[in-house]
Each structure stands twice: as structure tokens, then as C-alpha cells.
Length: 370
Image (cartoon, rainbow, N blue to C red; front, side, top):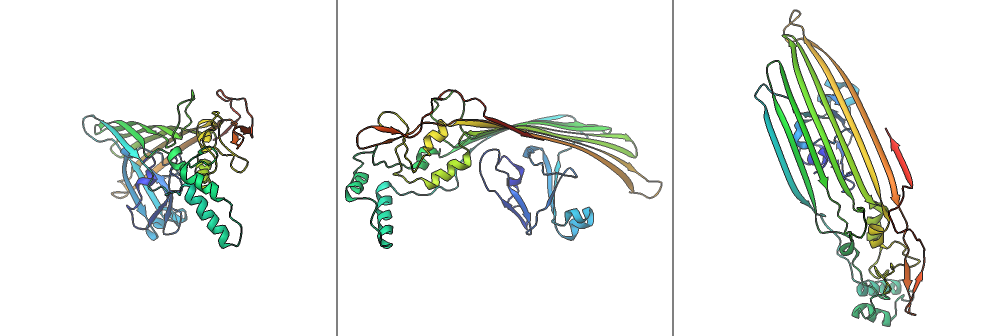
């Protein structure tokens, strides 16, 4: 799992997680704690930054109801999710390296009808409504025998567009140690999620829905004197997403809405198939629509000072915290259109769109926010 939120599903009573998409880079879940949205604290600081490598997490605590509001006031009325990263220890330096490789696959894909069954049931539905059937017996026989796959195609779009599985790799290198006076923890991580679309390799650029992330986590604790402690946390990441120019979400909508007999992938002359009702050649949307890129940069720096006050009473202390957070997101659109044609009974393709742009598209739009 790429995002910390998804790894918490089913681990805490009352904590519900909704993951609305599995697209790499956008698959973070939304927390709900007893029907309310909890506040997320990372190392004691409220923020929704959860792009943390799971190897860097020391503990996760969920507080509900009075237990949360007693400590954090009205802000915690929806509950709290407390995430703490690992800290240094009073021990010789220990270097740890973790390499993980996994395979992702769809939980379930629909079982689709072939063109003959689809057309037959479509006619039956029309007859039940007292209307004339759409497909003739000749057309039904052509779908059944596959005698003319260009005029009477039979395409399983899920098989043509999606891989059955796709790899995910994660690497983490960290070092931990320290003395009584100072302790430290540093970590570098890399995550690579490959996309699930089938690409034909004809482009000089990648059109799949991929995600790569680089993480930095660092913590330093210093004992200034017997009663004074100083701590610094640094959390940062670089995330790069990529997807087809036609958008990943739109592609999945088209997969669900395009019948198996809509059009062939290619016509006999090599042109892309399509018609006036279905202008969304799914193969072309994956391989011929260009691509879109997104870049995310997050940096969080937290500092704290803790001073014990034994001259007043044992265990009493005063603490001060300061936090800096910066986030930047940029999206660049390299999408382009593609030509498609309808194959007719006259054994020719009728072009429905024309576009001479076949090379690497130039950026159309660039948006950013911080």
C-alpha cells in the first residue's frame, strides 16, 4: 500500500476508511471515525500529510469522544488519529535496509457479454417494450460466427485495456542511534507503482498511470542540560504522477459504457476504429492521447523545546512547539486528439476526425498551487 491511510483499514474499532479510487498517486483513503471526520496529527502537529513511508512510523493511536476532547479541545470533537514517526535511541548506530516487491491486481472485474449475447438481449429488451429490434438476424449471425470482425466486432474492452496485475516496489534505507546527549533517526525511501493499462510501446513517452515517490524522514533529539530537551523533525517527499492524456477516470467510465460491438480497435487499412456514437476508441485513449504529469512537493519541519520545572513540583514541565509546512503541486497537460474512422460496407473507412499531430505533444496547460 502506497498511502498510510490504507494500511489502517480494519485495525481500529470505529475507524472507517473509504478509498474512492485505486489510481496510483491518488489512492489515499478518507477517514471517518464514528461518522465524523477525525483530525490527523503527525508528531503532535495537525496536518493531513500522510505520504509517510510505513517503515518510518513508530505508532498510530486513535482517540475518540471525551478522551480526544479532554486533551485537544473542540478541534478534536470528531476524534483524533495520532501518527508518530520513529525517534533516535541511546545505542550504537544501526543501519537498516528494506526492499519490498509486490503485485497489485484488481479485486474484481466484471464478466462481460460477447457481441452476440449483447445484441440478442438488446433486441429482447426492445421487444419487451413493444419496439422493433435493432439488430437483424443477419447481423446476429455475423456476431455469432465472427465472419466480419471489422463491421461486426466482438471486443472485450477490459481484456484489451487492462493488465491482470502490475508490480509495486518499495525501498527504505534508515539509520538510528545516538547517545545520552543526542539521538537521531534518518530515513530515505523510494516507492514505484506501475500502471494497470496495456500500452503498445509505440511512443517515446510513457502513457500509463504510474506513480513514483521519494521520502525523507529525519528526527534529532538533544539533551541541552538536565532539565531541557530540544527536538527537531523533518518530513518531506517528492511525488510524480503520470497518466494518459484522456484521464484515467474517463477511461474507466468508457470501459464500463462501451459495448463489445461498438467498433473494432483498428480498421483493415490500419486506421483507428470508431463511429459517431462512440468517439472514445479506448486503445487510442491509452496510447494515442498523449499524457499528463503531476508533481507534488511537501516539506514539514517541526521544532519543540521542553523544560522541566522540578523546583515547582516533580514531573511538571513547560513546552513550546513551532511548525513549518510547505506544499506545492503542478500539473502539466501534454494531451492530444487522435483520428478515427468508421468502416463501412463499401470496404472503406470514413474519417470522422482528422488530426495530423502524431509526435510528442507540446504542453497545452500548466497549473500549479502551493
